[in-house]
Length: 417
Ligand code: FAD
Ligand code: PYC
Image (cartoon, rainbow, N blue to C red; front, side, top):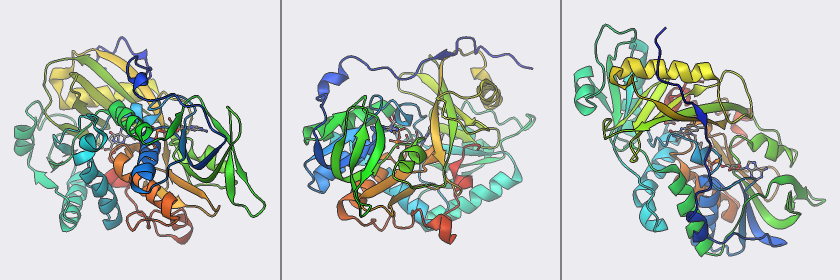
């Protein structure tokens, strides 16, 4: 067995950085709001921002049980792309990719969106067939995606090892040039500051423990660790915990929660020009602007609510990275952490109004919702404000699992489940 310098896996988690907190008010909850969003991740904060800016709702709160950005928003590997197979999905994800283009300007906060290209490696004939199918489907939908030979892949990403003698040789790759990365915590902070400037109350350390309904079943508010709060509309955007929160309103969702983990190396000078993903050997990697190699793994095999993953999975991921990039073998890994992702049977999200009047849900993004942040936030806001889905999220209902209208994106999820 090969040995790697994975000596200092320090459980880290995102900390509250001094400085940014002063940029928005730490609100105390009022007793009544027109709308509440549960969950202070990028999706929830973004939904509150769009509700205030685009739909004219003034009296809104975001309730976060921990600190903003402390969930998956601050724990993910920030890969942004829209190369999904089905028409419904490529429209949904491309809506978000287009919104990334202008997000820094809209928020007046640099979210460091970098279109550096996302390359998905093919190691088997099956991979190649699947990727070529995605490329054709994407191009029919106006979404860029192209097939590269191993030599073209290496020209785009020089550190790539295209030696045909390794266990899983690279036989080609699909490249979405418009794909890339952004700075995860800046997305949470940018939305928080912009929402706050529009009068949204952002309340941390405020766990929702119950959803209150009147006799007709309509939502009238929530119970929280800081007392009851009334609201006519409640949007749930509590990734990883969606089933628990929706259960408070008596709704069961087809979701399973799994740990998904990532790790970063010591910072080095620019060495990796794009994002590289390999679902077959279970690893994905990019280099942050700070110089760290950002590496992610597959999900754990068992459901769990722990924000850490199996050590063997991190080890396996590093083995895969070292096969694709032998020159990274001697790098030291600095931090390792996990998040909880909630996964639907078809690996596509739910953004919908529910059978409970006044209750809306955005969940099931599984391993892939960071890329969707501006789009999901906008569509949740639209659905809450108008009490009807936008055309883009109309197919992403809860009822599709009952009616059999699955949007199966297991292959495009590109992360081992
Ligand atoms: P979160 O940021 O998790 O926000 C939900 C919030 O709800 C949390 O802050 C939580 O504390 C809060 N909450 C939960 N319960 C309650 C309650 N009862 N009361 C109040 N608040 C509550 N996606 C990609 O597109 N690209 C990637 O490269 C990628 N990599 C990933 C790597 C890892 C290791 C992980 C874990 C995920 C990755 N994802 C990726 C998925 C992505 O991170 C998520 O889909 C996305 O960030 C979800 O955003 P969110 O705002 O919905 O959730
Ligand atoms: O959805 O692109 C993705 C992704 C990469 C790593 C985790 N999710």
